Length: 134
Image 1 (tube, rainbow, N blue to C red):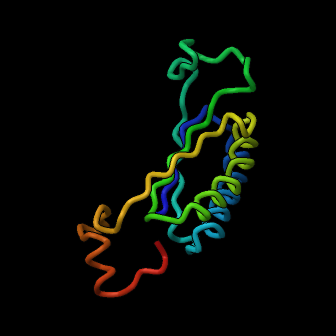
Image 2 (tube, rainbow, N blue to C red; image 1 turned 90 degrees about the horizontal axis):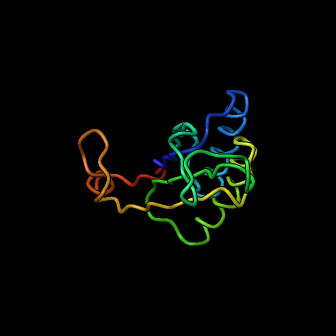
Image 3 (cartoon, one colour; image 1 turned 180 degrees about the horizontal axis):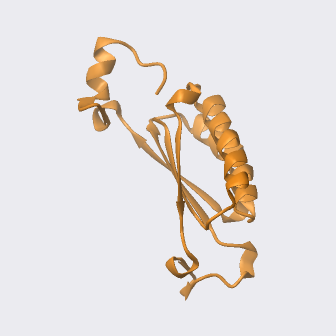
């Protein structure tokens, strides 16, 4: 953790590779975590699985399909969330050939008692030893 779910049109692997590095670096810098804790999920959305303003698909108007990103992480400060949004938006826009206006980042913060790894609540593990990598 942190995990980023990226719902967007399909993109070439070369652009996703470049975005992967930039997104991971953005999370590491903004949240003060190790790269080994950052996971990205590129979840392609086909044109017939996307609608905006009541219109199914995308006709190229309005600067491109919207990119929706869900950031799953332990609670962060507004300054950290602001820094992450600023750091990752340009990379996402470039990856999916759209504008920053079409990139929406939603933070789904969780407390440690709402997350389990290997069948154990993170809050239980934190009581045993501090986790500085989440």
